[in-house]
Image (tube, rainbow, N blue to C red; front, side, top):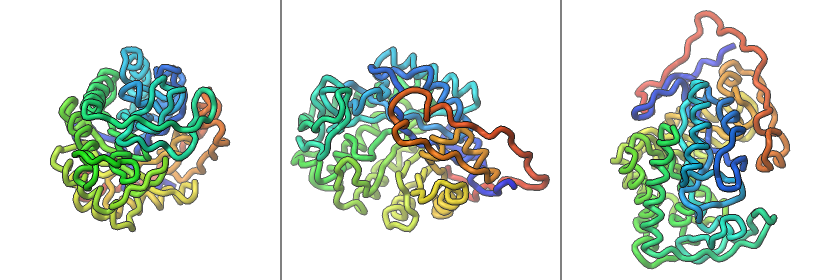
Length: 379
């Protein structure tokens, strides 16, 4: 039976209509060429998932020094733009819409991968090994960014955003989450600076704000989203003052008219979620914590976030294994099980484009309708 829920109601981002409120979250899969150029296999993968209300394509680096791992996508050369254009054309032909996530790894990088010493707010190395083309290697101490490095990096993000539009994306998502460069500026343990970019909450949010503002100025605020992960400790991050950081960031950027703010592992029961929702005037995307990979669990977590004030729901792993996730959730069909994690990042079609879709879709029962949210804001 069709699941009657606001999750499947049409929604709208500034300047972009969405057929439903399900967003495919950015998922790094390491299927690009060594130089970061997207491959034809990637076009097939994303086109399979075009029924999502919005696809946010995987993290793509805005410059060479921002590369994290091998075979990560990039968007700073003509070849990258051409490769991404194949992807966006395939998705558009299948009826979909795409944003591209822009991610600089900061200290999450290695000379064996990029050929360059990574840069970061402070020379604090990643407290773990990092995967490179030569296997796992000890992390290196990053070079502390100078004022000129900061200005150049801000400009690189803006240029990458322009490249993304040239490649056919509807917009971009600035990645300030999961322990990468912008998140490193937010966190006390990775940002030891004593200039205007370190110390106080206002100073630590400055770099993320300036990157986001520069991207919005380049391509339009309505084409610019921002992703954050309050309290996330991945990649050795210890933020400090989490409950002050994110409301302050939302306040600084709230007047720009951004396409959305995207919260990773959003928990509607936390003070941070409530404060950000209360202070953010625009569209909020919530990425829920999933305890089980069943349609019932995914729907319950998604609907709880919608009820708490999220406008759109971003899902990662469910889309990875289910190219037709929207249909499966709508009719309550079982979900494909994910393959061994080995296939997540090794390249090739196995565990990537070979997940099956449903053979047939039962017709909607007569009389059922999709319920829209009141006060639609549309993440």
